[in-house]
Length: 391
Image 1 (cartoon, rainbow, N blue to C red):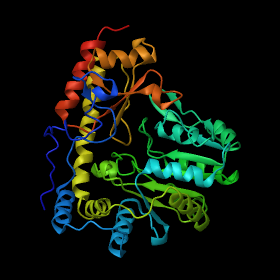
Image 2 (cartoon, rainbow, N blue to C red):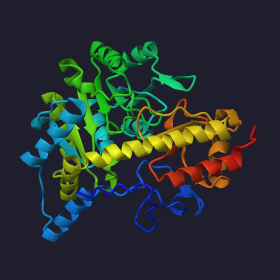
Image 3 (cartoon, rainbow, N blue to C red):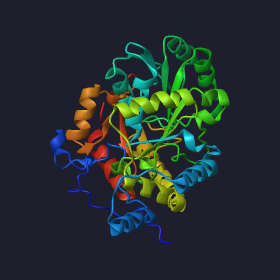
Image 4 (cartoon, helix red, strand yellow):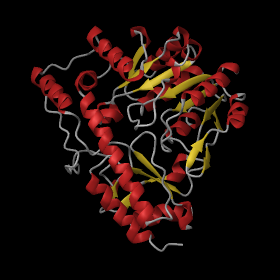
């Protein structure tokens, strides 16, 4: 099977309804190089587009539900890649992981309840807490010598005040892939204080050599009983626009509450295209993914070497997971507002401002490195032009 693995090819995405390539409507200069939102500039594997062509040729797009073959595909993927054994009744399909997080927050907590997140972190986590009237509790990650760790004393102090913890694993934007010991320790604290966990594991397929992703709910039956696990093929195979996520909840009571809230949102059957492409990708896209991971590792090394040699004031630790480069620009001496403005207006780069990710994100910027090597080199050259010699 041809797998569509020419990751060096530059693809024109302008005029394709892509939010990534629509700077003007979002207040950015027209000529910026967009490397912000986390979708890839690589086409999905051909097994996905072939499945869509077959679906289009059939021509009937009625109401749909996953069948036994779909679930068997899910079982095989999670067993093979993560040694996680799932059951069919655990599965709830939603339009996306963010959607599922909002549903879980509403279903499993009450207005005013505390929810713990670990900033700097994916900013919809904070939005899901604030927009639903819950109390935000931040266990800020500890940044030292280019590495991130967890302040477990503070974590337990915050968990004591909470009903829910939203875990980002692997972590966006800092790129940590939590160890089994770190996950187990967080889990033990949540169990001790009767706190439910939403484990956002959408990045689980993006783990580089030397690290291993552990599914949080697979660590023990006790942890499975308090966990809502959110996954999706969207990051892995660049399918975000198809609006499809697989949510796994083994605890019957948690699943019942989640499904009631899901129904209350007026949602019902999943989209047909999402079902078809998810199955095709998990069945036939694994070799494509493995080649992609090697290509992305090359991009991360490119960024690391360039910054060390050409812009040493910008610090970068190669991530253990994700395709996101989290750059420490604090030594450049700009305020967070100035930093983002200079990157946008002078370097002509559209990146994700670190301050958006909450406490500890100030002075950082996030680059989406899921693009051809040539584009990464271009971005680095733009940064060098502006920041070489900056104070």
